[in-house]
Length: 326
Image (cartoon, rainbow, N blue to C red; front, side, top):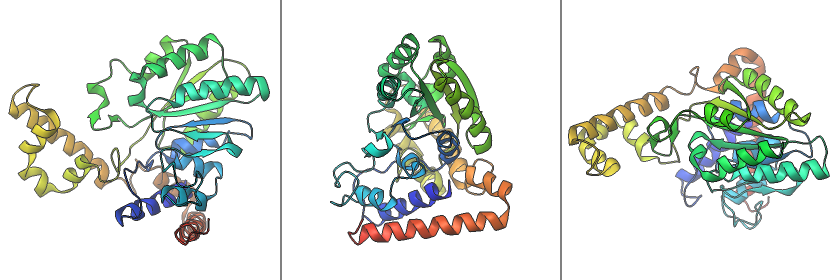
């Protein structure tokens, strides 16, 4: 978890410096979910990742210098610098990410089908956010996985935000009930608690591995950085003065001319900004930060040892990538 966090913080710094072009979608806040699941993954298992695939690849053991070079667009990167952070692949780890929302679900079905034929006893895991459950391909994947009894585990990382919209404002019902309606075995967990996630994920993966059919794990989390680095909502929420002076303009920009009175639109945006502001300002060191909870469990001595080692590894990898020697 420390390696995931420090690596992504290093990427954020590089993005701020202009070293990384385009959008950057980080998984800061999701480390408890990723680590809790990956600890049960074996060689031969498949990983289908979303556009926040960096933490899982870090946790799976992909070379950090290769990852950093790829995100930087360097020829020595994991995909020769052509994929960027949203299209990361490692054939050796049977892991692939995609920028297409929801695509990890059918990809995992393919990995699970191949695994059942070629690597009996293997499983495939799909990671996606709760906003992806509205994608038709995700529901088709649920259906196919149940009908074919595929050894697949669908992991839904629920931070209650779908890009810039509250998920409750755009999704009917809830992801767990929707998954259960297809016949998936469903479990839920607080994804900030890596030990609880480890327990639930272990049971789900063991069930899929033993032929008990596809599983669905709904894990809640908080992501303080919003949808992407430079997220305009988070920026407004952190700048109280800007948010208060330009709130009507922001309301028009986000909500348009329809959907109720101007006052209602502004109040809605104001509430959203307040939620984001509280989540982002008090995340690190709080009970919503999975690393903070883990530190309390491990104690200061062990925490310092782990984090010092992780920081040193990340610094060395980024320096290597920047120097063009991944």
